[in-house]
Length: 511
Ligand SMILES: [Zn+2]
Image 1: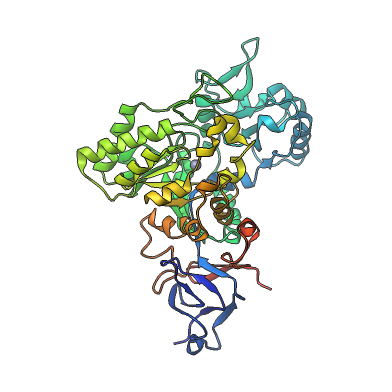
Image 2 (image 1 turned 90 degrees about the vertical axis):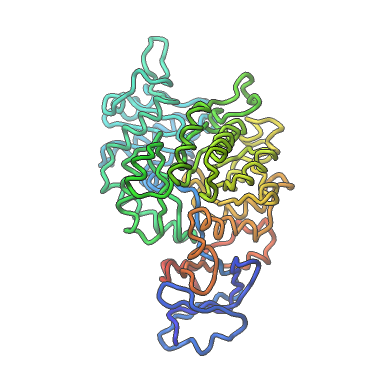
């Protein structure tokens, strides 16, 4: 038998234990053989594509366990304003894009108060000054704040009675929307996006995913802050794209989810908020805003009822929890549901789970709960002087304790939370290995496992993905270096040179 593709001269980390092989043979969409040395020769025919890995790492295709697909796609066709240094510069960018404008509204993204010389968000009047004849919508980096010009406020339905509308001295909206008002507004705006735009935008980001070695993503779509149209779009079109898109429908409507035939519910199903907006629910006060401990979006009783219902309906559940007080509520609800039903094995997940303490980690282990985490947060926000320290004070040293979680036996599924951070599993792996707090670091194998085998386990697909094994899907990446040999601080510089999805070479940047 001759094979379709042969990868040779590799340090192939199979992720079946720590076994390393040197070559992998692919026929159609599957791995059909693998081994050491040059024992592949009889498999190579004249039609076999041979990829020489030149002694570099070969890994299972990356599984990104937390990814906002439609959001990332729409943002890729939006105006990135993260580099504007003051309100004037922001205005100039808006003006320049509005001159060549063709869509229904201008969407600016990735702004934060801290980036501006003025140290605050621009308001409606400032946006009007530069752009008054088309709707303008700006989103803050973590989507917790939206800012509209006057035209946009008239164009989109504004939830005037909702909480979080900022008013000026004359009781007029400033154009800055937070909390519930922001969420409703975002949903209203996304509802107006036609599916043809979604389709083009999602198609447009596939190249970026493949370039980063991603062959499967967990797509967090729909619900509060987003639109169910995003989720419905992926439900109908997930097979139209080269990368496997596993839908996590962010809804609490169990009947609807069951009627759709989905086996899981949730994703970013918010129990609390973010550190950035000081809305993540803590058991202590924010260091830079004493008296504030974050907020919970549901009562314990509401979470208990919902979680219990998920158990009874055999749905895998993913809940969004960041602060330790939110994690506590989620664990209590799971303990209650387990106590009442005795059901285990649904692989429930907590998303983000940045501030779990030791006792909570142990309880999660006992409940068989997985942690879906984003190591890149530590590179962005961890360590002295960065956002975690500003918000949490000296407690920045207890965020994302990967070492402890792995040692306690809780499975970590790695994600990028794109596009809160860039869609790069390799950056996530670098971040887990180089956690700014040394005692929380994991080794390279453990970090890779988060983005491969554990990702497959997190969606019940470890029987066909997540490791290099005979019979499994040929989802494979070849790197441009040996990740086991480079110094740990250099892992962030490694790039993907080949991505193979189900036996097809979909990205190749070899010399
Ligand atoms: Zn998310």
